[in-house]
Amino acid sequence: MKDVQFTDTIPLEALGNGVSRKIRSYNEDLMLVEVHFEQDGVGAVHKHEHLQATYILEGVFEFTKSGVPVVVRTGDTILFSKNELHGARCLEKGVVLDIFTPYRKDFV
Image (cartoon, rainbow, N blue to C red):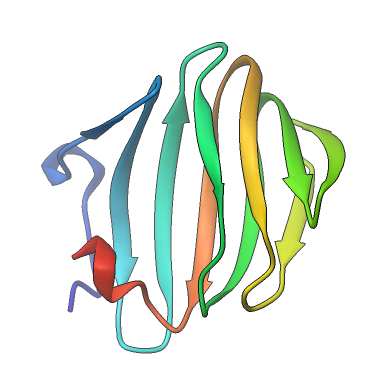
């Protein structure tokens, strides 16, 4: 578990498709993940057993939420239910903060 993380100590992990991430903080109940997108970067459509809230720190994104496209910008938020199909395409280079409950064991 990483309850306190200082930004200069967190590696940026390349995921491919113009996407990289930093695991900010987590415990068994909650996880914060900073995800960086290049313009046209793609987060493939997927689902997982976690609740997810996404806060757009900067940029413009087109998310797919249960098959419906939704455009979000800096300052917007979007929520995903457990096992809801979702994905993202970055329209303007940006960063999002993903919050998961419980934490994503597959990320650590």
